[in-house]
Length: 257
Length: 337
Ligand SMILES: Cc1cc2nc3c(=O)[nH]c(=O)nc-3n(C[C@H](O)[C@H](O)[C@H](O)COP(=O)(O)OP(=O)(O)OC[C@H]3O[C@@H](n4cnc5c(N)ncnc54)[C@H](O)[C@@H]3O)c2cc1C
Ligand SMILES: Nc1ncnc2c1ncn2[C@@H]1O[C@H](COP(=O)(O)O)[C@@H](O)[C@H]1O
Image (cartoon, rainbow over all chains, first blue to last red; front, side, top):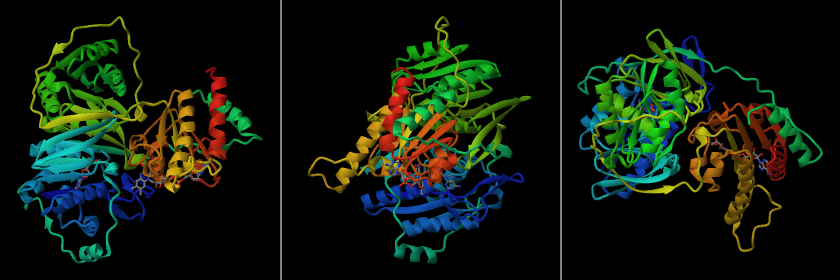
């Protein structure tokens, strides 16, 4: 199978992110592969292993610096990587990103499966996979905790609010994965060496034969969430029962029950 | 403003944030509920009771299972013919897909997981969390209709009025599904963290009770899981007394103490209950981003330096195996249960 893993680069989840001067700032926190997309790469690599003769290509829209996130995917075991980068792509909304990803997937040609993460840490929309599927006209197998491909069709265990559903479709398909897919493997020493030497092709919008998609969703303002009074009151007492009584009174006085 | 509200349900069980979306729609103008599925008369009836001015129902065996493509095509066709200004959805696993695809069909955009929506003249301005809620953005959609999925518990839930009723209008079905639903297995326990008013969560600490002697013949991992079961039993009893749901940290999920559907945090669920009680959870940032907007946070942890205490309103430095059952008992007494 020809498998694509779509990944984005985002500020590390430990970063102290703030709105500052109308922009989002994360100080000197590192940019990393979106944590959910590590699961996407893991899911793609599992499929490569389960289906002999398969390849995994990591695909990312982002600035030149996003090559680092692609190198992480290569170090994990992806065969190659493609960066789509264009100065016209700074203000992409999710539908725009989906259009660009769909165009890149079509240019790669012969793709059987595209694996996405559940959502990005920065935008957090969780809709790019389904939009990409819709544009391609391919079935969407969303929120997979497990993927099985056999004889040209794919079955996933979909994790929903009410439990798990087993859903199938014919190739080519778009899949998004959740944490249950399995812990992302650590890059191997060999993988890191290979990744550091890899030269990653950069495609422009011209290469994809398209102009910049127009954004319909626009940000008008950034805010820091109201800071809350966080002074903790530690409840003490001579016995667990005494502590519990005091704590229950305090909680009831909050009138949240 | 003419708003369509998609009522999300699974086998007839409505995701409660659907009604919150209906309430929001009513506050903006006329509200039409949209119900898809097979045998959905009860859902349509409830939509009238929750205040829908009209109900559009696609009731067809081809829609018996939620399948994104068929649902999206049906919704897109309905929206094209009726021209709503706004389509609202509760934020769920299904609606993220459905809204995403419908927006592609209608060449408009989706504002996901919004916690606020205001009309500024003709323009709708939504507030939504980004960067895991570390920052909020105000955002607009210049396409028509505007589409938005609302965060559960962010908008008031209307009271149903059983005297209200009406007749649903039939919607033409587009049965162009590309997937097949082969089977379904329910969660081990019903978990609806997004809508819970109270959540009691357990972390790795729930297995840490050396004085509990596991039955003979267990290896170390089995003994750990056995202890975790006892710990989660205490957590569950407290949740039950409070009419709440059981949550967990990722460490507890990864160790196999409890299924993933209970996980709160970055790679689990983001929750905003009125009361969140964290038992044996250290308070790693990836956990905090999932629960720090709870109204009142209570932390029970052995370690007075645990970062969870920095987010908590009330804390108990102590052993959860002693504190949690005592708390259950005290609530039972005070609440008269
Ligand atoms: C990309 C990424 C995503 C992640 N996503 C999530 C996520 O969605 N959700 C999440 O929760 N984590 C997530 N994590 C993991 C997170 O970093 C922490 O590892 C995890 O939250 C720790 O869980 P814990 O607090 O239960 O365990 P620990 O950190 O081990 O803490 C256990 C706590 O229990 C206390 N304790 C022990 N015994 C007792 C006792 N008998 N009584 C009282 N207290 C006791 C200890 O003092 C300690 O504070 C993520 C990490 C990464 C890197
Ligand atoms: N710039 C991007 N480049 C490649 N993949 C992306 C990009 N943005 C989003 N994705 C993919 O789409 C998923 C969902 O993103 P989102 O809809 O923004 O939450 C991510 O987990 C990625 O797999």
